[in-house]
Length: 405
Image (cartoon, rainbow, N blue to C red; front, side, top):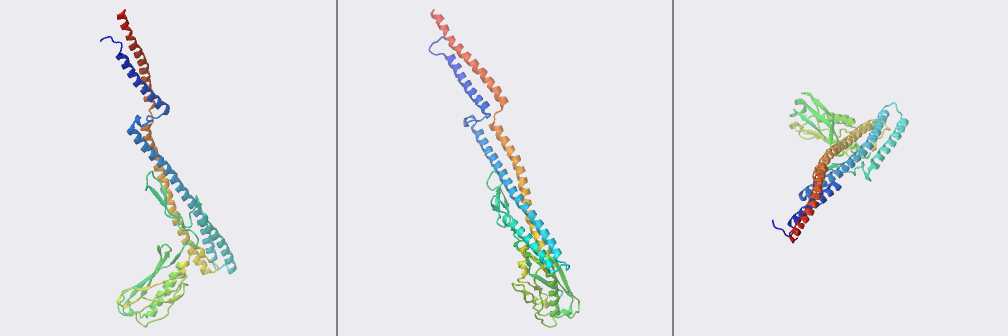
């Protein structure tokens, strides 16, 4: 190795290594002081991209939890109001039962009616004023509301709350009722037969529920006229209509003779509930089924706001209306409870996911203090040794002077 003055290669190498060591020290001190392994893209380009994606997901999940809790708040607000609403209907039903007894006079029934009117006024007040964040909940306006319960679009839960205004609760009417005759061929007195009568209640949303079924039997060899058959059907219809609480009655308006070769009887009711006619199918003698139909009945207008207990018969109907109202409210509360349970389950699941996603981001972005402290100690020692090496490399040049002495 020659002796040179102009170029001190040893000092240059020592300087280069010291520069790299100082850069490492700066990075290590930055990590230790910030607590982050990645402070800029150059620290770990791909790691930063992954960590940022995980952070966005975790933040989205955090907001989704808040959204779900808002939904739970809506459900709890609505259910709490409907609980009081249910108590009111229970009281109305109890008072209707009280008024249905003939131990009551017209005067006492009017007093009971006054109590019921005030209760229904409060029920209507609950339905029209219950709100959450300025949105009314129980008047039918809260429909198809979505709660974003995920970090990405489309992850939603929908909530709809039915209309619980007193004019919209317990709406029902008599549906078209069919009567089928079996084993009838020829005249009615030549073979036995029977007819099943089913009175069905239709809610305002189109759902139906059968109240009961009755059967009219015809003994073999019985000499029944079309009039008698129609009368039997009408009697059964009226009986079931009374049970259903519908304000509709039927009676015979014409008869067609002693056989049922071509009878045409049925029940036709106008919008006020008045009977306008009866039809009993056609071709019964040929085995075709017969039908009675209540096209429009006053029962269509039955709802909680129409409860009237000033007569025993009206009080009986009021009991039925209150019972249907309780079923309607219970169904609404059941839907709300189901959505609330779903949202609570979602919050629990999202909370776990958020923790795991945040932990994954931390593994990438955050510094491991134990490892980084050890790395800093190493670099600090290297920096000190590098400074010593540079001083020694510069001192080597002094040896050239000895050659010149």
